[in-house]
Structures are given as C-alpha cells and as structure tokens.
Length: 214
Image 1: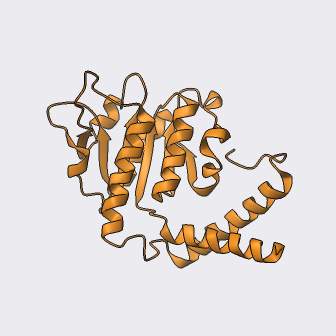
Image 2: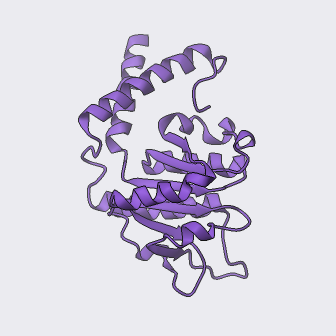
Image 3: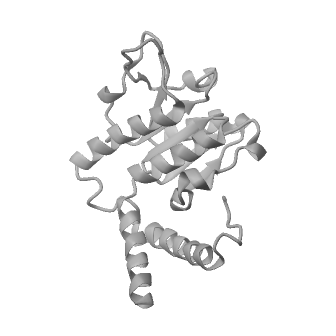
C-alpha cells in the first residue's frame, strides 16, 4: 500500500508539471504583507503558474505563511528581485517576447477580461498602498482594471491576482494549453527530480528540516 501511495504521489507531481504554464508569469512589486504573498502563491499554483517574482524593501520580514499556502509554495519557483534590478528584469522579459500587463487605474486602462493571456505574459501586481511603481508603469504594454460596481475602487491584491490568473487560466484552458506540456522535456525532468527530492525530505522530516525558499 505504501509503495502504491508513493507511486501515486510521483504520478501526481508529474501531471501537475505537465500542466504548468511557464510563459504565464507574475511579478509582485513590493507587496508588503506575508499573508497576501502567501495567498497569491496559492492562487498561482492553482492556475498552473510556475514562476513568481517579487521585489520587497524588507525581504527579511516577507515570509511565506505555510498555513495559508497549504504547501503550494513547494510547487512553483519563487525568485526575489532586488528593487534596483526590477527595471532591468522587466526589460529582459520584454526582450524575451513577454507582454507586460500591469494593474493600474487610469483612463487608458482596460478590463482585465479583454486581455489576450494566450500570449507570453508577465502580470505585475502593485503593493497594498501605492500600487505599481512609476518605473514599471512606464514599461507596461497594457494597463488593466477589474471593473467595480461599488463604492470602493479596488480589491485586495491577493483577490485581484486570483481573478486575473483565473481569467488567464480560462483562456488557456479553452485553447488546450493545459493538455500538452509547455515545458521543455529536459527542464520538466530536472524540475520533477528536484520536486520529488524536496517532497521526500519535507514528508519524512515533517517540517523539522528547513528547505530552500521556505
């Protein structure tokens, strides 16, 4: 029974990796709440996002809340981008062919549902107080909003992220993009091997051993 259970676990990890969307990426521009970061990580995992990037003025205090992520932080790649390097990072993404989509309320913004998320997309979400920084706003290909019918003009950043990611998921699923692996076979194999190793350590140690990025 134990061998059967382990084999199911291995198969499950392989299936999840085959559905990952490496060209649907999210960047958090100085999100300051660990709770928001953790909730966004969970939404990323649910929508098949593989790569999450974030900047933070106080990176030492921005920790993953495992109660909120429910382990989702183990199933995506999370990378810290120094504040001084974020413009260079976004420039590189644009050079790689990514459209840069930024949440921002202004007269040129369009509904998040009108975007084509089939294209390689870097979604940038701003922090809880000031939104996306001026430097990154200037680099946006598109500015989007979530239409609001009430008195308030915005949603919590984690809720907004989930809505946008699931619109992207809806579009990509309709195109069959979750049916065929988008990862290169060699990269998929390398990630799977690393994830299996982490999973074994995490389950055997029952949280006593601190793993990278935790």
